[in-house]
Image (cartoon, rainbow over all chains, first blue to last red; front, side, top):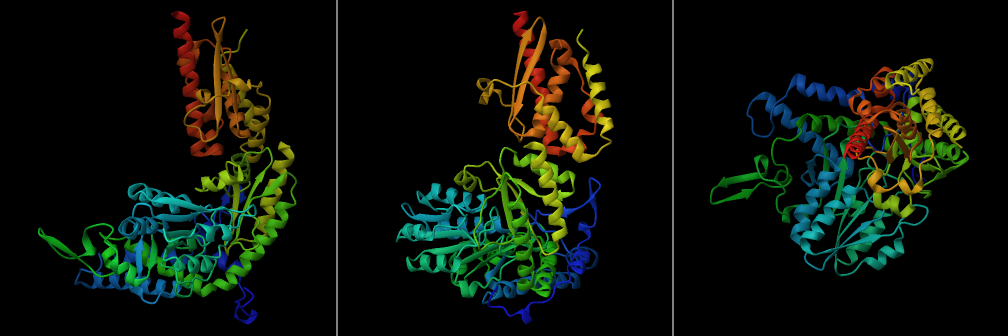
Length: 415
Length: 144
């Protein structure tokens, strides 16, 4: 943030932003909703909702093959999202953007195509101890199939990766390094540029799980020099069920197709099939057209609001919440890296996280409880799960005050 | 004289009606009930005694004494412990037949679905099912 001058930061009008999100204006259990489960999924602005209904009301048609006007309009809108994502990720070309169901499918696609093609018996795949299950399990399936080994980057007590230990894991055997840009459970932002550079020095390719980074951090896949970058639309104000995989052209071209049928073919005969060019080679079947179309509105929402300004505001919320929650007796923060996206994870001594989640819900405060699909990470900390409050640009300090007040009451009652 | 299942259910419904649907107070009250649950022996908290289908851990055992079933229960979360304590209160001290044949109506009357959500509701149903299975097993054993 320090490199960005104050002039370039837009002044955010939080009330105006909140007004763009209809779902926020409701009561839960008689109390105003405070939605702090943004790391799981963010709420959607009017522009996204209208783009969705606009497609169905105005030009619902299948894409790429139709000659009629609606098909042309739908195809243009669909492809416009690809162009918008090229800009969002700063990919060299829009052909390097493949639409998927989301981050999980993007990772599975790479594991099932690039991974299956490149990984051989005795090879090694490196993942980090901070990973979501969806950046662990596809690699385990691949490793099992190929007789490869999974190596894990250790997590330090404050929730940061042990970079020196990572360097020790790298060798000529390393084929893939799969690491998240930011942790969904703890918020830790990983030094992915260094991680990528070090992996490339031993000839390994790198996949970045960008699910948690996309709403908060500037992403420049060319500057990072990552080989693959996976995102989900719903993590940054877009619809569920769609996302994207960025891959370097030369890698995507060399990879075998993922699924067969529909748009991924060039010619089919019973003697054999030739495959389409990228990105269509990886987009079999009728895609989730409506949501891909609305995805563009989410990209525009983030771009127009200004990611640096959003990140600055969210950092203020995180700091405010961290100080307030840490000051409550019997509460312990999990993940205290100085470099975090707006995720606050904590446990309360002797109080189960489910109970805290349910008690906060009674006050209209929505937090996440549990292992957050990162069971190995929870094992590292010797806990079953945490309470996780994750903030978005529409959250306010007043909402955080309500959460803190609720937490204080719970601790007082139960201790 | 042991109160009938119906009598205990009606008392619970009355107690909850005083809370007037206030979610937070209801949760606090349920947790308070859980705190009053007689302690379960640590030795009984085995994997075999865990109720399957609950998101939280719930341990449940049962004994037959003078033709009536006694339940012992515990949970690793306070709210679930309170919920299972309600069931122990309703079904402990009853005959196996009464337990097997009862249709519990108090959860619906106190609006349990509304304040515990779907996942915990499913867990609650699993607890009821397990208690009926215990009653059936104890009855069969006694008749054998």
